[in-house]
Structure formats: C-alpha cells, structure tokens
Image (tube, rainbow, N blue to C red; front, side):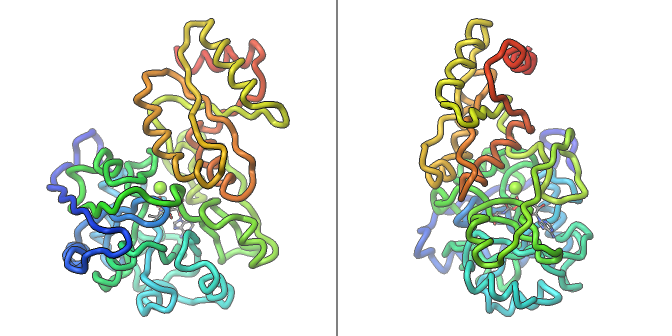
Length: 357
Ligand code: TXA
Ligand code: MG
C-alpha cells in the first residue's frame, strides 16, 4: 500500500468528455481498450463515479487497491453490462433464483448482490471471501464501457480510501489525478449515493449497506431483510465485515451528527452553533435540501464544499430514517465517525469543543 502522499503518482491522466445518454462509441472503444490492457478508467454510474479495471486480471485489480490506498481486506463490486450478459457467467459460481428475481426487478440500477464467486475471478476482487458482489449500473456510459471492454469491470468509488465519494469528474481528479489512466467525464451523477449492498449468501439476506434501492423496496420484494447495524469501529483500517468501516466518506473537517429526535432540529442546531460561537469556535451546518432524493444527490458535493468553508467543525442534521434518507444518514454517520449529539447541554458542548482544540 502506498505510504507517502505521492507514492504511486506515475500516470498521465487523460480526461475525455462525453454525452451521458448518447456516449460516442469511439471514446467508449478507446476506454475499453485501456481496460483490456490492464489500465484504470474512472467512469460515471447513476450513483457515483467508479474506478474501473478488468475484473479478470489480478494485476489490474491490485492496481485499483494501490491507486486508492485501499486495504486489500475490502472487496470490490464487479460491474456487468446486463442481467443476461455472458459476462455475468464468468463472475458468479451460481445464480440463485432469488438473485435472478431481484435482477429482473432492480437491474439496471443501484442494487449490488453478493453471491458465491466464480473461481475464474481473482481472489483479490472478493478479498479472499469466496463471495462476489455484482451489479448492472443504470448509466449509458458505464454499460457502454463494459460492453466495449468485453470484460467484467471491478470498480470501487473513485476516491482515495476513507474519503468522500466522487459525483463529478472534477472530484475524481482531486483524488486520483496522476494515479489513473483515463477519466470519462459525463457530468454529475444523478443519484449521488452508492448502491445498496445485499448479501444473498446468508439467511435472512442481509443489507450490508443502505443505498439507492431502499430497504422498503427490498422488503417488498423479499419479505424479511436483516439490516446490518452500523458498527462503531475505531480505526477504520480493516474490518472482518466488509463495508462496515466506520471511518469512511469523511471530509477533512470533523463532522458531528445532530439528532433532535422528535424535537425541532433547526432549534437544536442553532443552540449548538451559538454555544460553540460563544466559546470562540466557528462551526457550520452541512447544508442539505429537505427532500431526501435531493439531499442524496447533493450530499458528497456538500461534504467536499464544507472543507472549503474555513470552519473547524461541521454539524450534520439527521434525516428521516426511511427510504433513501437511510443511505444519507448512514454516510453522514460514517463521516461523523459515529459521533451523534442530541442536546445542547454544557457537557455536550464540551465534547464538541474537545474535537477542535
Ligand atoms: O454505487 C456503487 O456501488 C459504486 C459504483 C461505482 O458502482 N461502487 C461502490 O464501490 O460504492 P465501493 O468499493 O466504494 O463499495 C463497495 C462496497 C464496500 O462496502 C464493500 O465492502 C462491499 O461493497 N462489498 C464488495 N464486495 C463484497 C463482498 N464480496 N461481500 C460483502 N461486501 C462486499
Ligand atoms: Mg467507496
């Protein structure tokens, strides 16, 4: 894994703009050939930008981990171009009826299914678990790229490990310029938070990460779904439960979640801001729209922009814990490293002050 900031910065990163709905086939062919020759290509999906490599090449996959500084214990999602694509057969060892039914209902779309992996896929992709996470993204550029490459594409979000996921090509360059070969820039992503990750290898099936397909939609399709609770892990360097790292999606400025549970969150927020201000600490709220879909779309850009505000502490109001709001709260909770406050008592304010000294 890269040690210093600049280790691994050796590539010239090409950026090509293309239409999100009708991408130029020549550009896709070029990008596909970069993937076939073992290169790294960042591309838009409906959720966030992904950092793609040929999932069949152990060397290419290892270069994803190196470019991101991601621990090899955290497995990657493999993307294929359609539910009935021959590429899917290369990726999974079995395709249970339940997977087929979910794929019919939600693909292409922001649902990732964890199943038993094919021995043909390098162990690095599933981080040695023997399982594989797979999805069909709902974005013409993503699907066109996979089809042009003719390979299943392993792609985590195109950010450095532990940082905020990218929803524009500019975000990708902020994180990975000089570490990857190509960025396909098709404008901002529409959904803004990542896919839901559903583990079909356990009973009851387990929602490992809430995302674009909501728990309510999954329960409607499946009946019982176990929602794996957020785990409070202190260091965030590795975890036996993939995707459960707490230190994740973090801006540089410390974040604390504000939960007014039942009360008026605007009031509690103002009390906290005032108390901090009296103590000489400049904090700011993470400003998100009230509508959950819009909050999801703007979440990561808001967290990135917050780093530019010149404040020392960010307070994030909790959203209603339903629908896509669950995904927004999950990411904010992780950005906050699990810190939540629910009152403006002196001891609470003291806790906040201790984060910034
Ligand atoms: O929307 C998305 O899912 C985006 C776009 C690019 O498709 N990708 C994405 O990848 O968010 P990444 O690597 O940032 O997050 C993948 C999540 C991680 O939490 C990882 O631990 C989990 O999926 N995951 C991957 N493979 C898994 C496996 N075999 N078993 C359990 N969890 C897995
Ligand atoms: Mg990620």
